[in-house]
Amino acid sequence: MIKYRAVKEKHHHPDIGTYTAWGIMGWRTSDRERAVIAYIPDVFLCKTDAQHFASLCTQLNIAISH
Image 1 (cartoon, rainbow, N blue to C red):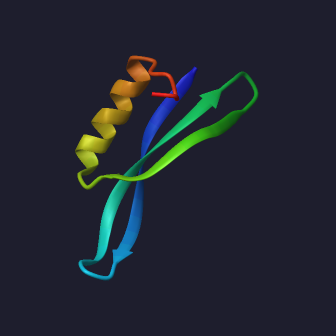
Image 2: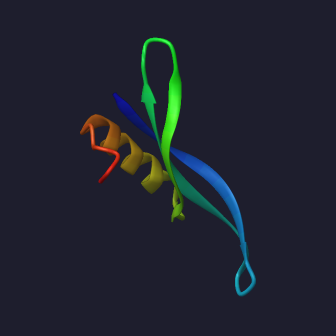
Image 3: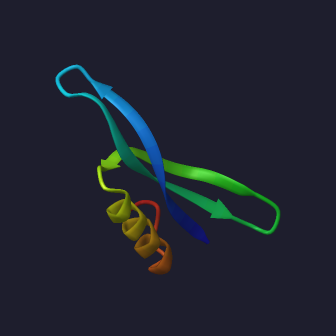
């Protein structure tokens, strides 16, 4: 099964300065291990939106290719 979660990040852009963003991580779990299979940085600026999206992806069992 693939699970998703929101990951807090700090970024810096020369025009706007430092900002906090949220990326989405997908990992595959098995009986013995957990392996990150995808990570997309800087997707959301709102923690709640990022967590809701990650939760939906996990609940709906979204394929990592999507």
